[in-house]
Length: 486
Image (cartoon, rainbow, N blue to C red; front, side):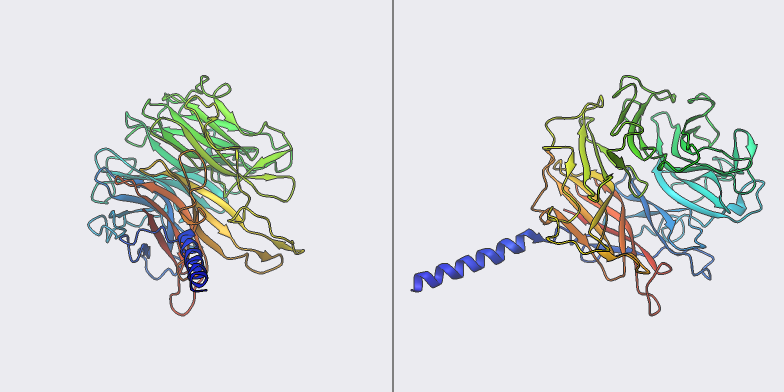
């Protein structure tokens, strides 16, 4: 009887221990405060209550610190800034003003008199310690690319553009755009080995003087901020699509990486189908990659599968030049699987990675609810960034929305969520709860938009969280959020 009792007790202890292991917190407690760093991004003029920010992009510096592109969450935000962050998650207050580059807005644009809203989408560190921020200016539906360069101390670099800024008046095809004309936006930026700046983004279709058709765009700048006319076609490479009078899905590029070879990898969507292009350093399509220069995950016009996301197309490149992509698939049915693939450097699918091109369905355990209730949308994971740690494990981070009933004023709670996979593509079940971990600090919602591999092999994820300030939380109470996984 005693032996039976002991065995039962051991079994209960084993079950409890196993359950605890499955839900082990993977957060590095030596980072920030108990593994989480929250940074309020407020810049002058302080009286603007809309001046709150989150992290849109993370990039490394040469000395192991992190650069964050800071963007506004709330209306009236004017963040077009970078922050420099120490490896432990604290603001580097020796940079700029208390860790941030100075406040600028579109009214400082040469020849411009409209305030507009500047949105930072990407950041890059240069070899000499300088910092480049890229994004766009938007004013009443008219868009223009925007760049700013700062010195290693966080001040505007007078040698770049006009007083450190490239904020052109909205134009398209050499003609100015006034109102309701659409325009171009930059969504990401990369620096080629020779210092050429390459930005990628989208073309917003409009009426009047602006572009009539939406499209994807690549733009190259010289190190001083001037358009590099030797790149592509007079400095640009445009991929225009025919909308045939109706919306046919998002078209635009959202990520670019400069490879050690000098070539460029660009990802995005054409008619909402996920695509990868490889370009030569001078902006020509590299026909030796994939099929005639690109890898398309669904043929244009195909009806079976549609690829979409938070208008992001995350991918990363490992030390062997292999490309890991992770994007959601939206078939015409109700399920929402995730495409998770590794490609060889030439664009062919790597057959040694995973068992299929699809990751599990949206719920974290890969199982569908036993019974679906009418009018309820179930868990949905949006992958927004991919990174590879020092052990070759792949971290995919983004947001996961909890169920909500259609008709609610606010969609379901969204969590800052990460998933980790082994080098062969299988889920790393030692990470969090069966391979999934929700970083859920106090606040109504949170979201991860960026991931960065640190020199010690650990991965930092960054985004934003709504916080309680002055008795409430909401879009006007938002902080930058970072966490690190060991």
